Image (cartoon, rainbow, N blue to C red; front, side, top):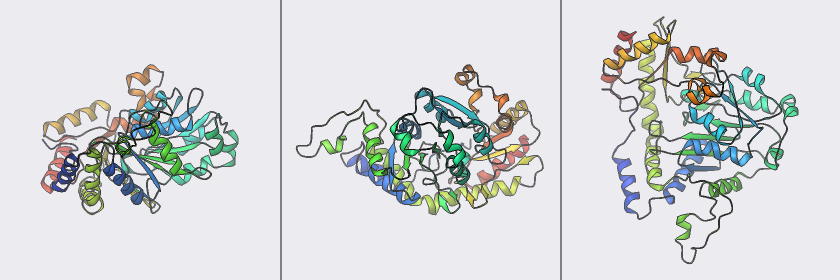
Length: 399
């Protein structure tokens, strides 16, 4: 079986993890801080907080902004459940909107239609690693018309003075939008380092802070760091210093810090991310494009367009004029050829919990069309040329 998305593990990664294991310190410490610095230098923001998941980063930002009952958060219908779940955790109102057919990303026009005086956050999702149109979204929330609707309900919201743009960039580490890497394109950005992502820490996430003045992002980093550790004023490493055992709890925080043993994996992968991992993903993408782009039955994904370059996280191939039943049968036939594929994603209204809240996929026709025709193909550096050809042949014969 050709697997769908195994993690990239080589000797340098094993060495880095072994170093963490034998250092005597395996929870949050120097390696986590080093990874935060690597990410901040890479994406061009001053402050990055590493956590145990991207989900934790999204929720911490909503909590920091004071999002709660009566507040509305706009989320694309076509995303993983985590993007919606964090809104529910805050007891806020989830507002789903449809996406663009061309790139699976949130529709600017649908955002405009959904904004009300209660809208506090827009959460665009960089589907498959292709960045959303951040200039357009940022321009929208800063427009006089939209700002005139904004009704803050606490000091943080008052200081911001507009709707926050919080990017779910779980897929898009290394992607570029108009020459700038994702991470600093809006108020805050969250990456995922889950096991199937381009760069992994097994489980993990990175929250990049880019809030405008008068906010001080370093100060917000410290606040969120405390919030991620039960509201405790000192982490475990700080408490080991001579005479520094005493601490305080300043709020009932959460437990979502990243340990050093996880950060070690990410540090080692960062050393080869631009030189090996991304170019190898591009090799796979190019082979798929060459095989599929002239086939009139298929729609290849957009991964380069108008100064926007994907991180190549997913290859979402679409089949024209196919029913859901046919798409599922094609997937089964691909598996029968010992090739693992996937579907990204089941839109939020198809999930039992959200369907129970009254969300209906028929109200989001573009998402419905994309969901019924999409198949995600394997993309990772370890795929050999022979395996790529096996995938291509399995897909074409199954169709």
